[in-house]
Image (cartoon, helix red, strand yellow):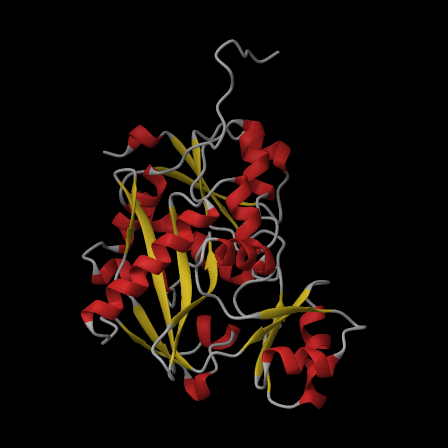
Length: 319
C-alpha cells in the first residue's frame, strides 16, 4: 500500500552523545514503517559513510538521528547535496534550533517569551551571572539535547562545577534563568501541509529532575495527557508552540518544550527539538496517541512530509 514512498532509509545511531537513544528511535520507526508495507531499511550514520548512503538508492529518508551531526543541519545539508528528500526541518532551521542561544535570540526578536540567559566561559564573572539571572539557575550545553550536561545551580560556589560538567559536552555553555513551575511539551505535526499542535503533555519528574535517565530509561516520570490545564491555557501554550516553530522556520514536525511559571501562570519557551525521540518513553508518540494517531500512522505521516529545502533550477542537469 505504501510502496509509493519507494525505498526508504531510516537514519539512526550517528556519532553524537545521543547515539544510544537514536538507535532506539530508529529501530522503532523502522519496525513501524515495515509493518505498514514500506520498503524501509536502517542506516547507521555512525558506522557507515555518506558515500555508502549515496549508493543505497534511497528515494527518501526518515531522520531518526538526535544531537550533533543529525539534528543540527549537517546531515540535512548532505541530503540536499545528494538530492534525497528527508523528514523534519531543513538545514537552516535545524542548525538554528540546535543552538540554544541563537534560538532564544530569534524568539526574543519575534516577541516570544523565553527565560533570560548568559553565555558562560571559563573567564565569566560568576557573581555578575548570578546577579543577572538570580538563583537558582540552569546550566546546560548550548548545542546538546536530552538534558545532557544540564544541572541546576542553587549556590554561587556550585556554578563552576556546573560549567565544568556542561563543558564536557560542548565548548559553548549557557546559563539560564530558572523558571519555577510546570514543565510541558507540545508536539507539532505537519498534516496536509499545515503544522498542527498536538495535545500538551505535562511532565512530573521525581524531584522535578527530568534528566537524561528519567527521559529515556525510568518509569518514575508521570506524563499527563490530557495535561489537566484549563482549555484556554492549553490553547495559549499550543499557539505559542506553533509560533515558536514558525519563527525558527521549521517544517514536517518538531517538539517545543515550555515552562509554565507558577507565580503568574506565564509560559516560557525553553527550546525546540527538530528530530524528537521516537522511543517507548518519547513524547511525540504519546501526544499523537492522545490525538488518535497510532505510532505506525505517526511514522507514516512524518515520512509523507519528507522533502528537500532547495530545488535545482529548471535548466540544471547533473554532469
